[in-house]
Image (tube, rainbow, N blue to C red):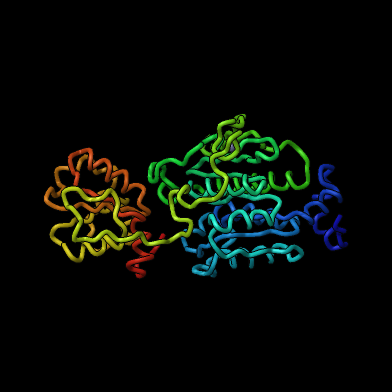
Length: 392
Ligand code: ZN
């Protein structure tokens, strides 16, 4: 067992006073290795509490950079670190909190090639990611690496927490939801909004579960889902059963290795989609989605035959807008149908491509078959077409 120095005994004295922890529990924390996936809204409070608690080796993995719109909830980062790597920003902040522990910075995206190897280097994986694709990828990799996954998610004012560990007898995420929802059918935080303090609640609960797992006290959330409603201030606990037919952890699992195609979106965050030859684009029957590169080329090559419709809210259009776009907020679309051109290809655009996909499907049902969604929305446009646009 790792000895604690006088400095460590003093620093962690309020933990050591707890019967459930004591000196032996604090020594276990010093030996523990915990990986926080995502230095964002959940990863921030979780990593801060884990570092302060004296977790001996704390890994942070993220590929992203700090942006101003992160600062509303991602407390690891500061205004001075906007546009720097999130992992280095997190490392800086966590070393300020506790210089006695080892912080490992993994400045890359978790993907099918590296996930199992990375997870195997840690005792507990804490999932702080916010997309369905990453949630399924992390779940499958944790099951295959036989590591407990402390799950957390937030949506507007709500959140939920659980611990998934089939190797310890509990269910996994796929026991609850075997397959991801179709892309665009569920809005993410960037589309729906999220209360920063709710991330603090859920991320702190995840840190507590990770600490309990490493030290071995209390009742784990293994086999239970804790849900939180911040509007009414209520918690509920649902019991979760393991599914014998689960594709990842069932009796005859279908998922025995990591395959990128299974996770819907690319394993690396920004990968331009291959272009369809524009000469072959059939205006009467266009594809459901086009890439930002294709949309940009269509607008430049065929300006009179293509109309760009922005379905975001007016406040978003004030932050940034693609030149030539007509603003029709999503909720106003049903009353604006008669104003839409019928002799043009309609390209529908929002922030990340989720709302606009729903509008595209709606318009096609309403008799506008010549409608395509711009995948990735204005955010992808800002990254790949026009870097002068402000991102949010
Ligand atoms: Zn399962």
